[in-house]
Image (cartoon, rainbow, N blue to C red; front, side, top):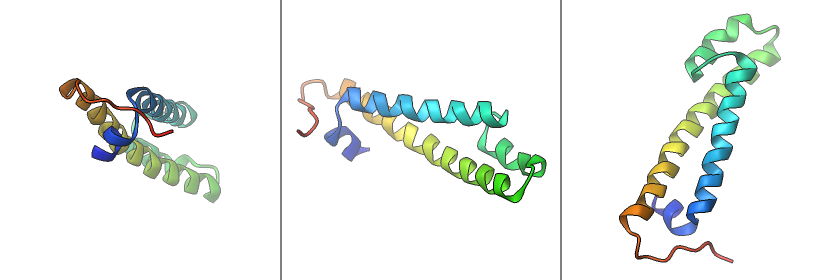
Length: 91
């Protein structure tokens, strides 16, 4: 989280958060599920092994993005806690 805070501007973090949210929404719509475990449970309805692998991989990435989202959200909250510090992205 500290690296996110120190190395990225609030706008960059917000853009990253938006991209992660978009990806999760995409999986929810594509597989008609609400959670990574629901996606895993849907393996039995996959038409073939390739789709099973894709679902399993999407569930793994989804969980990773959930963790990353929490870190980005916490990093964004640091900007409110430490407003006097200048934070600019490296050129």
